[in-house]
Amino acid sequence: MELKLVASNNTNLLPKTEAPTPVIDIARGVSHDLCNVLCWMNGYLQELREYCGPEGLPLIKEIVQASSEIEQLTKQLSQVGRPQLDDPKKSINMGELLLQQAEFVGNLYPDITINLNIDTVSTVVGNEDKMKRVMQNLLLNACDAIQQNGTIELGAKKIDGSTVHCWISDDGYGMSKTIQDRAFDRYFTTKGNKGTGIGLANVKQIVEEHDGNVALTSVVDKGTTFDLYLPFKNANVCRTA
Ligand SMILES: Nc1ncnc2c1ncn2[C@@H]1O[C@H](COP(=O)(O)OP(=O)(O)OP(=O)(O)O)[C@@H](O)[C@H]1O
Ligand SMILES: [Mg+2]
Image (cartoon, rainbow, N blue to C red; front, side):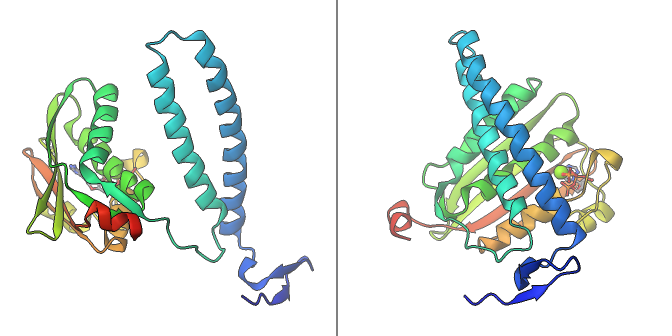
């Protein structure tokens, strides 16, 4: 690839793709500082291993996993304004992914009951980190909607031979028709300062990047269901994809 050099305002020579803007500066600055904080945190986590008993180790493992996900996100932030690389793709078992997320919610919200309806052959091909974020966003929204006690159902099934259907249902406060119409709009939130309105817009974008689609049905005071339809890929085919 040929990189043309252009003079920026402060006379530094930068590749054309690197034109600095305030947004890029902020993104890379935040990424840099987050990396430093993560480095500290990981250091303390290593130390913590020596103090906690065997029952604490699985929890530390979860935190290390979460920290590595933040590291990936931070790396993405540092790439803002640079040419995008293709996403790493692999075989993802959506049932297992939902199971992991269910455990996370179970630990965080013991008053929420989680029912699982999972089929073991629900594999798709894609970016696992992104797919995790889809499920995390939907689950956190479901937990917000439930507020205290309630039930979430998570499902993953292969349907019609070529599609994986995943769903997340909650019996929370639901959405009016007006809110449903705007729910996927970027920056639309009903949560005031507690929400950014980015969650569902990202869900839609990621699902569509994976050649899928997402639909919602909701009834006020009864609950909400998000249905995701993704192309099924056989696990053997995925390894060579
Ligand atoms: N399960 C749900 N039950 C009821 N309302 C929901 C549910 N999921 C989303 N919503 C509505 O859709 C809006 C947009 O959701 P979205 O996840 O995009 O943003 P958010 O949750 O408000 O903020 P954040 O960006 O922090 O996720 C929410 O503010 C809420 O009004
Ligand atoms: Mg949200």
